[in-house]
Amino acid sequence: MSGDMSGDSNAHRVVVAGHGMVAARFVEELQTLAAPGAVAVTVLGAEPHLPYNRLLLSEVIAGRANINALTLPAASEPVVVRTDTTVVSIDRAAKAVTDADGVVHDYDTLVLATGAEPRVPLPTDDLRGVRTLRTIDDCRDLAAAARPGRRITVLGGGLLGIELACGLAHRGAEVTVVHRTPALMDRQLDAAAAQVLADSLRAQGIGVLLDVEVVDVIGHDGAVCGLRTADGAELPSDLVVASAGVVPRTELACAAGLPVEHGIVVGVDLRSPEDPAVAAIGDCAQEEGRWTGMLAPGWEQARRLAHDLVGRPVRASGSADAVVTLKARGLSVVTMGAAGGAGGAGRTVTLSDPGAGRHVSVEVAADRVVAATCIGAPDLAADLTAAFERRTPTPKDPTHLLFAELPTGTGAGQGADRTNLATMPGNATVCRCNGVTKREIVGAHAAGDRDVEAVAARTRATTGCGGCASAVEGLLAWMEEVDPPSDTRPANATPLSTPAAADAHATLGAHPSPGSP
Image (cartoon, rainbow, N blue to C red; front, side, top):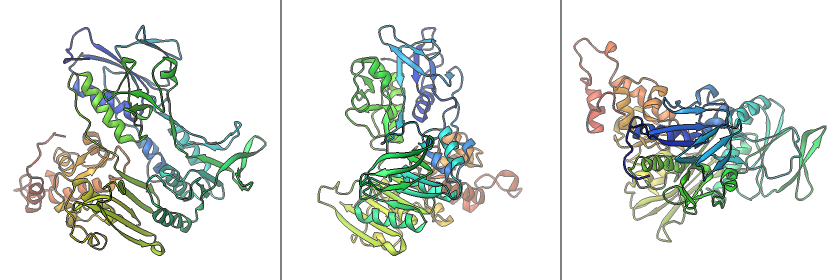
């Protein structure tokens, strides 16, 4: 669609099939950008719930998040949201979709945001006790099933599998991780780092079986009682949780005759090459031959498609998923960049201390951090992340990166203190998922936001992976000290009149306007 939309009776009809995190972001972006009356949006979500943060489901299992706090801000009128509504067919000639109740929804643009479903890599024969973690209902079931003495096997040693294993073990279950390759998190870690991670899990009482192929589920009286491996061994288990990746949901697109490979094929404009009236974003989409299965690129697609629909196209902002953080009880694992990406021009320094559960590897090229792995070193991980994202110059001798705090550190990691927060530049990124800076969080505080929930509603900080929550809390606590609410200031004080408050906003370069995001 070209040209700006105008608010008249001929509103552009947008139907969104799916209501996950990417779909919710798309609708929010479109509402913000479109002129009043220019678009008529209908969202059809298969789940009975409003959209929620799936990335934090493992945090609920671990007891570090409340399931009732995962719900994302609801779309406001005039957007029509229908929950518990599954789209069953697309009539591209008529530009209409039909839902499971037989209701037809006409569209000018159809946005497929159907997401992905967990892959279960073995036959289950409908046995009770085989679970996945993808929805709120899955989360409730797993939390209820995990209890002391329960033998639980997690199939898959990737990010989610390890987070799940730690959370289930925290609930008292006897947990074993079974991974089909010789190294955990093999998409992110090399062999040495993966070994440190495996040892750290075992130190927490979690079993780790590597290079093991599970070929069958053993059942008794209709329920799982174990697993059989390729070498014939049997692994007793009361519950099996599959965490072996996801498969894009492409059934609707296939049935409608749209091109599908691994995901729904779309171009750089996020439209199907077969039908420009149909777009796809998020986990179901394969853009220009690429499929990531990560949230940040999906949010980037939502932003671009919304801008395109109102006639204000924007370019992709680049890779948004270069930093990977493992959220697991008792573990600190952060990776960034791609090792070897400097084409042989980089220098790599490594500190491996398995006895202390610590492994750090940093690759430097052209005096910049281009890749790093940090296990068991959260403070250093925070500093390296800041250097990586802001492309800060590194010391001439890169070994100094391993033994001293970087002068450019944001202090936004677990070891943040008041000094670090005070010296953090205003443009330092605090929430990587949403690109929220210190300046925006301080601005939210100046506008009256005094807790994490209020800051999240204004800026989106903490609504992604949740890894920045402690940093946001620290910034708010710091701002309460340097710029307290008016009812706690001395009678003769004016906003930002204290030296500490002046220093805080001098760091930002300018005092943010109240009410500005």
